[in-house]
Amino acid sequence: MRKTVRVVRTVVVRSVRLPRKVFRVFVELEGMYRNMVEQLVLYAVSNGIKSFAKLKALKYREMRSLYQQLPSHYVYTACQDASTRAKSFLRLKRLGLAERNYPVVRRVSIWLDDHLWKPNGLTSIKVVTHRGWVTLGFEPHKQYWRYVNRGWRLASEVKVRLDKRSRMLIFHLVFVKEVEEFKPRGHLPVDINENNITILIDGVAYLFETDTEKLVLGYYYRRKRIQERYDEFYGKKSRVKRKVMRKLKEGEKKQDIKWKVANLIVRIAYEKQYAIVLERLGRKPVSNMIKRVKDRQLRHRIFQASFRGIQRAIEEKAREYGVPIIRVNPKNTSKMCPIHNAPITYSNGSRIGKCIRSGELWHRDVVACWNLLLKALRGDGSYAPSSVGLDVDVTRVPFGSNATHDPIRIPKSLWARWKSLPQTQFVIILN
Ligand SMILES: [Zn+2]
Image (cartoon, rainbow, N blue to C red; front, side, top):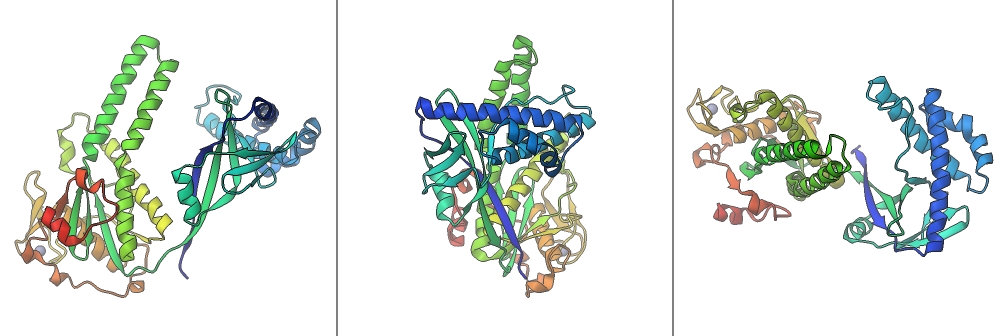
């Protein structure tokens, strides 16, 4: 009884530039759709309705007679759209965060269900409008073909937005894939830290340098500086500022290392058919790296966010590849010697500690990995240990060979270009 997960991804494609006449049909369609959504949201909010079924039951007839020229399923999707908006507005209002007393419908995407569109080959779709079916070609890109060629299928829901300046439609296509988790043949513990991510493969620790700390904080302060400058010149709510901030955010996203590292780790696990072992989400003790800062709380919060971001990225990628994830209790993972079950002491700020029982040296992040592995094997996680069918003899941990306190260090400039782990020998030579 292996677990099957449904993985969902949205892919954005643009239509070709449409002739004026065809585009006008969609402008009309959008206008009617917007009117419907506006009326429905107002009604839903003033009557406290959050459910699609209820809204549809109460308003279908009326909307249908108002917009007879539209295919009937637009009323369905407008009700879905409106109930989603009403729900989030009512939540904001409850929290006292709504800007106004009534919801405003600004940006509109037309929601389509399986009655309103169908695929037409691989590079165009058909959409039914008040003027009948319209065939729309789009420009497929690399990402689109990747999903098509790797066995993903298109889900029935599509959203369409109009780009009036370029007379194009922007489709948000949804791809789904059912992925079966494989039965793990071993474990790959992953320890996430401020400046590195350390993993343990078959007894060898690899430390990927990330500089998350520098990167994340750098972004934060830069953003704040720009924000202040724009507030000063243009006022707090200026359009210019919003635009600049959006650009900034996009740029930051592109540089985001979390997807690169998640990809790398998940591919290694997939090739080896190992389960990934992660710390269960929760508080992670802040290490002494953070001491230097004035605003400790802020810093802590920022690191927490990026830590969770990396975990989520790994989890999301793992689902896509069917890699099982085992979450274990993070308590004391770097404090206890995994061989002697005795405390490890670290002298001021050092990442190398000493086992008080036997005196051997340990690298903090390597210890964490070994303890994550042992916890997973002992069943201190969400996965039954018996399903793995192997046991680790901890006394075989090769601490004579420096492996305990000397992980293989890989700079970001190197691993960021990797798709998977190269031959081990190769890495060691580089090291
Ligand atoms: Zn020890």
